[in-house]
Image (cartoon, rainbow, N blue to C red; front, top):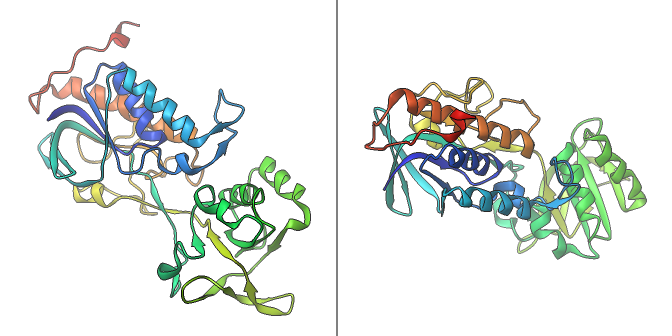
Length: 321
């Protein structure tokens, strides 16, 4: 199967790229391992323009429907390989090969782990990375959250709907988050206790998490007994596929692009959380913006290079607008 453009990733960046590719009458395919990416797991989103409040999965589904109406194809699969011959790319997903004139990496990032012994064994058995997914399991129980940034504060606010007690463990000297999210946090009162300048050093438990060992005593003890632990300490960009094509990374390990989302490899573009275009400010609106720009750049790139994978791209009706 041959396409004008293949977009790898079906989160806000990938679906936005798909919408714009469809408007350019590009024959496009969006391939995503997990539909909606992290946004689909985010719960209520209250800062996306046009929506006072919208569920993250619902927002992604609306984007998907919009792209589908523009004849953009969707594939739920994991891309295992991307190779390049000149300006033609071969993508393998579910053991099938798809070819395209251009690629957009909208692959997002993976949740960062604590890197502690026993963490892998206890994942899903008391250690979690998604409050939306697993928070309800701890209804009426006591949990801890490791973080200190906006994502962790939003996680606390959501988890507080279920749990009896919550400890927010912060490595730094203060919590940093959007003021409105901090306001929600303060309204929770004694239900939430913030432990500053502290790290989790050990996870204790065999078949399930039983307690945490802290880097320094809290209220006279370094042991903190909890039913569950949620980790919200950032993410690591998924860059291995891009690196396999020779795409350059920046000093922080993100895919390096110019202002039009073009990488150093001709025909390869990137958008979303795998790109550090807006620094640490990573939101659905910025991801969607990068996806729109990447799709536009891919379209303009094709107009220059023409039919390099036996593809014909129709002129965009937007060119006349």
